[in-house]
Image (cartoon, rainbow, N blue to C red; front, side):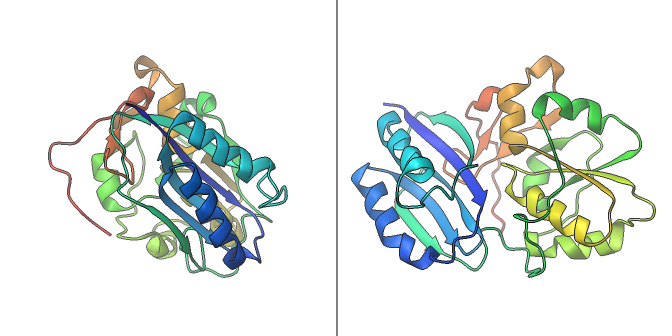
Length: 251
């Protein structure tokens, strides 16, 4: 049996996020879903797996059902497959942020950088005037990244502003292009850079996963594998399962 895996997120105002947990848990349990979903006042984020029918039912409920009342009208979704169930259980967690940057002034629902489609990404990062930044942690970067990308050498995303303060200057770095696994970290990072006075900030729409799904290997500027947060460990082009030889652990 194969399973359908859905990586999803959206920044959206969810002041009632605590009340959403129980009905969302019931919905997922009814459909036999496993994985993790995070709910916070700023939106939803997570990766879930199940049968095709189960995943499709949950996504339909999130986007068009009464539970969220149309607030998830721009859900970022990436689908892939797994030869075995990649999660042991179902978890619905309540958080302050769906991705922790610890910068309260940052609000991606009000201000984000320019989205760049996977088809246009190669041309952008090949421009010598563009600074390319990988917003993921050092373990993920070690597993794979894009040519020319700067490694912030962070252990967790909340350290990213320190990297910006040390390594980037809005007066010098006129164009900055960022990427991450699924798009959520670089979307929030782009909002942060704009708040710090950077003029032109770009980020890969749908993240590395969308790029690997869209761009054929012979045209790719990606080097290595892409770490994913489940038991598959890593994915390659076409979102095929790839297990690295020595998967380390890091927060």
